[in-house]
Image 1 (tube, protein in one colour):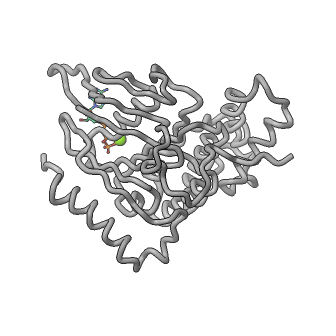
Image 2 (image 1 turned 120 degrees about the horizontal axis):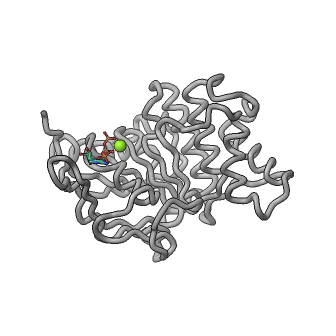
Length: 284
Ligand SMILES: Nc1ncnc2c1ncn2[C@@H]1O[C@H](COP(=O)(O)OP(=O)(O)OP(=O)(O)O)[C@@H](O)[C@H]1O
Ligand SMILES: [Mg+2]
């Protein structure tokens, strides 16, 4: 039985809905986040307003400590904002949910389960009540196949490389068929070449499935290569959205073809300008 991985109804190579009047999947409305610390209250984020549309890939970029993970965690429902409100499909986000699957930097696979078992856990959680075992199995196999990990289904996490673990983490998230995929530096722990090939794979999968995704990154090339919009955050404390760049290049994008593309270079330059001229990292 063939299960097609589909996260959203948007077709590949369609422009993000940001300009087409479609309803946003996620709305972040005037959100602020403070933390209680021993020194008092620390304002991490202020006045964050952001709508995320079906089929869009949005990256959050900014210097270390500016609040990218804090914002992603709020969308994931792993924390609640101290100000404002976040909505997913018009319902307030009050906790985590299967419609918002998260890929973490460290993959977070359970070490005592095989790759198949790790993905099945998520699949059972979402579809276990309504689908037969054979269909659940097919879902897991389709997800592993999508990230070229079918051959490693019966391996345990300690038996595979960091890049392969990350692939399984991505398969697990896609297998849940979430409304939106949230990724916090999914390739941050990988070497440059593995990172590049995983970026290319993710690029292909995102375009093929028409998935909606928000990804945190430090990497300017990664942001331009993968996203429709780059949300550039100011430095903290009290960080907010500084500027947003629309990346008007068809997806999936070919890194070799884009290497000499002046439009690609111009997007990179805009992000570098923001990060290193307008918001230079403070030296401690
Ligand atoms: N639970 C917490 N308690 C207190 N302060 C926190 C807490 N979580 C985050 N912070 C602070 O909020 C700010 C934003 O943190 P966050 O982890 O979101 O940054 P980031 O942009 O993801 O950084 P990095 O790129 O290094 O991952 C930082 O100053 C951090 O120290
Ligand atoms: Mg972070």
